[in-house]
Image (cartoon, rainbow, N blue to C red):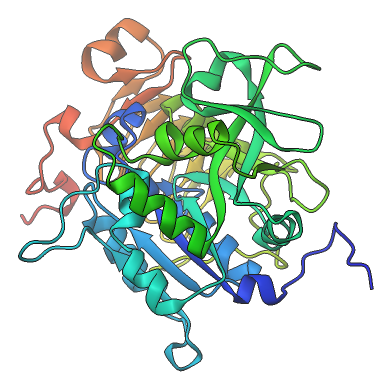
Length: 428
């Protein structure tokens, strides 16, 4: 019986798979958004975290054995996973386990590369004995059924299958870039090239790795053990493992995310501009990423908050939001929000205007502010009368301004440390 490649299906291949999510990276191009949190823990889409997309893809694909490899500023990520992803059934062999670098006498060190991170957790794979290992990046926003990719890997008898997507050539330097023959076998792979090669049918595009790899477990173990003994290796999948496998003629194949079996949405949110754009897209009438899709829900931890509230209906003092996402716990008090995304617990006070902006949880926009094309970090307090997004030079003197003019504001830029209490919450 044929399986419709456009349908989502759960088969024995996903049940026989363990997923390892690489979630230890900082993401320096996000500037101060990753000052106190790893990139996968950065809030996204009103009430989610970036890692929720990878975890939800696993669960929705039928993969219920998941390890999350953490390292940089891991506490916010660990706390989120413990709160939001503890519903797996232990008696059924399901788990989401947090895997920091092992520690102890004579063992363990910080992960030195993506391959080393998996190598230091080979004991998990040997204990679970999966047929296939799915290695995933935890810092992209996308919806994908991993089942067809694993099935394709199995059908081709591949050593490794690399998820790939077309990207504009001028941004391809941030990815692993590959060439493949007509059968999908990878013929060349280079990590983050300064001059990325174009595609034969489109010189302005390159074929980029999504940071998604399928391995047969025993093959992966052998390669990682050999790599660990190589003193010249940086112990990274993109820099060392995959280029070496391609060079020695191993069966390395691509899996195009544009295949009919894929859902078609994938975003690298590794820069302030990309992060802002991916969030702002959600305000569209028909956004490219459907967060309301009940057939492919994005799971997360949701704090218990009251509904969003819009108060006052007076001339010049009307609480309203247009073409925006407003999350639970928000209070729009006599202010206007247009084309923006407000995360949980945001307050916008009297006669302020927020336009084309992304405001992270528990931020407070003081009275009489004008905020345009900005990303306001979690728990920022903007004093009354603050103006952002109208004078680029003034913004640069105080905050970070991206290439496209998006203004990023964090608590440290305003001198607001952990002990800072916004005026309206201070005791008299």
